[in-house]
Image (cartoon, rainbow over all chains, first blue to last red; front, side, top):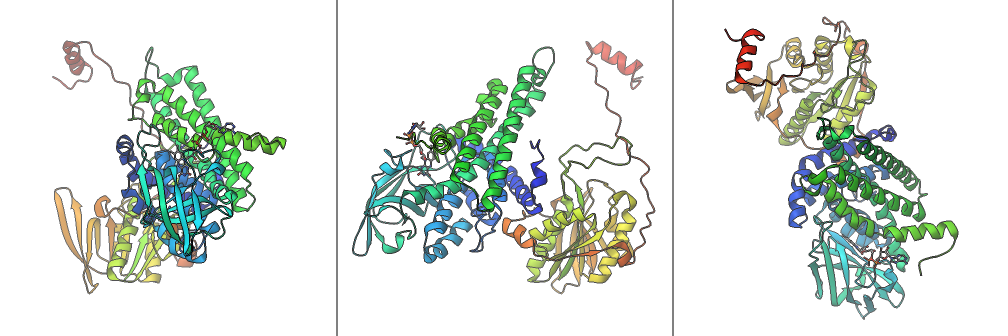
Length: 384
Length: 254
Ligand SMILES: Cc1cc2nc3c(=O)[nH]c(=O)nc-3n(C[C@H](O)[C@H](O)[C@H](O)COP(=O)(O)OP(=O)(O)OC[C@H]3O[C@@H](n4cnc5c(N)ncnc54)[C@H](O)[C@@H]3O)c2cc1C
């Protein structure tokens, strides 16, 4: 696999072993089934128990019997998963960063010990509901509300584009209250809660994406994440998840790159020469390898900063924005190198490219991160 | 039940190795190393036998540079209990016999009921260590095992081996040396919690001297060279030309 700047040397023996385990698992158990699921538009549910056994879910969580891996090791896991498909990585990102991460950041001790071990073993699945039909880049416009009642809360509203939505036993739902936006743990058996699969996606087809509806859902007091205070709490959880995306996208890029390289050195056109012997094709490889290498260095450094407790949201915006755009560009170039074969699902680049359109949009669109950087660099807010 | 598994650090079997220009060995810079895949199967079998016996200890041992600690950690991450490293900095300076005598010294220290090893390693491919070790120990051996069943009293084991014409089942007294073939089992992955736990497991280090083993190889490598490259084939225009070439150039037809 592409590693021109010897990132391998920067990894600890444990980090390498973790990466090798996940790489072998992905090759043996994810690669053989992913295309079938992508075609059918289904998530490979049989993998969930395997994720749990291997310790992939919540791999960077310390305590609660979780592996407690370094951020680098966690990033390497996500890159390996996304080498197979962004939908597989999304499942693990949501479970780890958005669900377990949110509970660990804002949950009570009881909520943590109730949910973290089961989520880590893959016995329970979670989802994270922030986006609504009319509140995407601006989640502050959300309409879902939670009103205080004598015994707890009454939840009304809906969420859209929610990854793992129909698989989930527990949804983290962000809703407006009299004290601003707060997070709630809503179990799928709550009367008035429904989850519906969203059909017609041309991207992220092997991921479960759902609409969630809440009609007079009565929630107990214990459903509130007590330390969640305002929209900034939701954004804090997203920062952790975006860290993972910056790593994961590299996997999709490398998967596309390796496929195109194998293809270009064997595909012969004109005078018995492989297409890789032409300068334009070589330029593609030079550009792709350069951009992948830069993204690897950004991701590696970001993990160091994260483990040192110094990672900032601006760094995360830069990394998510750069690495996802890089991966999208690489997968498109790889698709192009494959010619007509590139539009066929026998080869991964176009599937990666299609998936990355979602990754480009979710967890803060590319342009929203542009504005985050713009604001940080100029001091002027260009959002509204 | 105490089981000793010998494991070897070998170059990643999926990469194409290059020879050093002076012919003294293969280039190892930039090459990833892994545990000999047959040894991984041996570790897996040891773990399963321990699980079935409801207790015991699995020890992984290797002879190699300090870097080979990584391969021991792999075994520990799969679930082995502790490791033994016999430090050796030059792989070309020892042969299968030195390895077998070193393992014999480790066996003398540990007194296992069973020694499990891979049938061969993909680097040297000599397939000699298990047999030599059994001979040095004066123990029974069962090589190329595709199934191992230990008797309830742990005094013997039934081993199915893959022979050319079919399967052969042997009964061996324990202690014994068993070498693992490809179909013995499907090894587990080193799980992530397992990898973290392995960090805390003990690895004891020894030298040949401290084990009282003479580092005196009987076989030394004289040189390494790549097989000659195959010449490109020729396309013939007609059946007549083909027959003519087979008769007059290849001289395989009369
Ligand atoms: C497959 C998939 C899975 C998802 N999973 C989840 C999930 O699990 N949980 C969840 O809560 N959400 C999820 N989302 C939703 C995702 O986070 C939102 O789609 C995203 O935040 C963008 O919102 P939007 O789609 O409403 O686009 P909009 O906000 O309507 O944006 C449309 C376009 O306008 C641009 N734009 C918006 N505002 C500005 C501005 N001020 N200046 C300049 N340009 C602007 C955007 O960059 C974008 O190009 C998922 C989405 C997808 C596609």
